[in-house]
Length: 467
Figure 1 (spheres, helix red, strand yellow):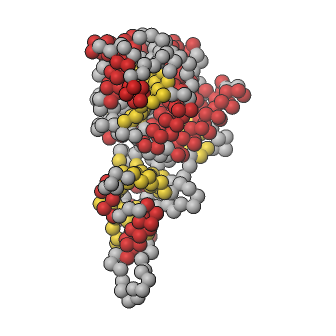
Figure 2 (cartoon, rainbow, N blue to C red):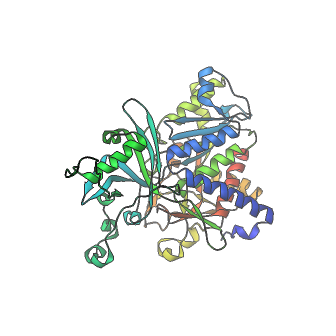
Figure 3 (cartoon, rainbow, N blue to C red):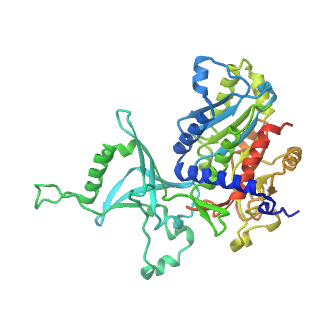
């Protein structure tokens, strides 16, 4: 039952295709480090592929034809793309669902302070992280600041060669006796994840002998005022995310892997929407759904728990002249979904937490998790055997490299995805995605071969899946 390493099966043409896809993915993951940037990047790709703005089509009442590609976003953080199929939507859709949020640190609403001639920004970490991994790393800041007059200021500092970077400090080893005796979850505590942003005091001309109160903080504010025309209170209406600085890079002498920030889950998001944009007219309407807030429970207006997806399907069916309440329910119930999310790759350095024969291995193709959740399958979707049987048929016919896995040993922990939320509509849903090492760390690792097989799988699924 052991799956083969897919690298062994590639010819020179496929190796070129892998490298081409990998280079475009590295560009994406290096530039799209926040949800907003992911949406912007994907929309530009959609426009280049000839996709129309569905929001405008709905407003104008312009129906779409089979083969037409479209996109629509919500709050710049949730995105749906699609291709109208040949069959009525009531017969169901083929859906790829991934998330575009990743673990990080968020700047608090009242963040700026000075202590011991240093200026800091206070943060609140987002998602499941090992806090000690985020210290002494070069960090970048991305996001938006919205002023009282409604003007939106885009912030991106830390990734250009001439940008400064920021960091969270750590205690020197020479004085770390007590710290080294702590449990890993409190070696660095959440309130200690404040980023260092300055140390030079403000000196005003003509004010000799008069020291500025909190002069280092004042200097930072002076810089922000000149560069962005913002005041301290503008942090109150800001969304600023702190992420690792630096581009994704090839890993290994053989360049077979990519190390970068945010593989979870942008590696599945990218391959999903690229597979859709590169697809021909399908029989069933094809959808790619890129959601926010998965790392904190898929909640909120831009998470999978919102009504955005359902509302857009209703609007789309109305536009096509197909909408009735029961027709929409049938459309949803008859749909098939790949919940595209990463899985834990087997790491021999920590092999004791994996059950080896039911683990995902880098280089063995896209991974399918029949169920996720934790311990007694709590919080999971559990895919039907019939659905998995159909997937086996279409994947093997297309010579797609694939494997199955669970997320570690039964009682070691676990995790969830958006699968169970879509399954609430009565759809066939299974988790699928790329196996990743060092998941939820600042720098994660994925195999180029698995990224390629995921892209191929998603294309075949959109064209061939029907139950």
